[in-house]
Amino acid sequence: MILLAIVTAGFWVVTLSLGNTSLPLPQLGGATSANVPFVLFAPLAPAIALNACYGTPTPIETTAVRRVAALDSLLALAVVAATAAVAVPVAAGWISSANGSIAESAVRNLACYTGLALIARTVLGNHASTVIPTLLALTVSVFGYGPEQTAHWWAWPAARPSDMLPWAGSAAVLVIGLYRTARADFPHRS
Image (cartoon, rainbow, N blue to C red; front, side, top):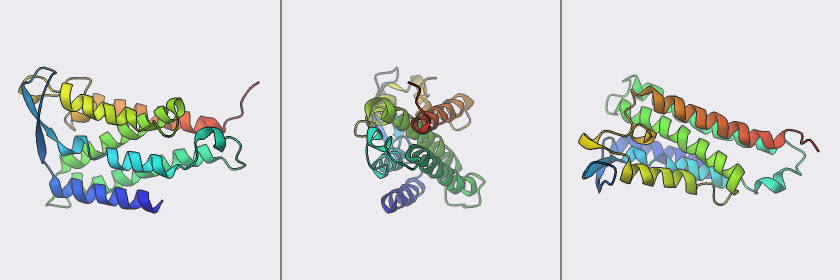
């Protein structure tokens, strides 16, 4: 838990201090190159740290007396909610030195990456679950931009914060991941 708190706090310090910093990368999705924002990769840190805090693999947790899977879902939800709580004053402009659109993108991307990691955890296991969100971030950074550095419709982490499809998709992925994780506590039918 301490690791998760430190990584999440560090994520916000770095994200807010770097702001609009971007890295020019060659593109294979339509543009010759694109300035990929730091906020595309930064939310991977809390999503990966969250996975490290889960502890034992899911099959071992099914024999536990406590509902461990539900607690894992609550922890994931708490991280995303805490991130959203930090983003609200930034997006509202109460912190004048920070960029509100960066904070909004960070919350959306963290929800997407966390949901993908939770889904991958139920399918691939605890150790390989962070590969899927990392592959998404890398795929979007190389293939996700079209002409004039606009994000393709499927490249949710690179989309503008005002686009509603990425918000809805990220929320849906998070809800599915939370459900699939908590479902391990449901009684199994024989």
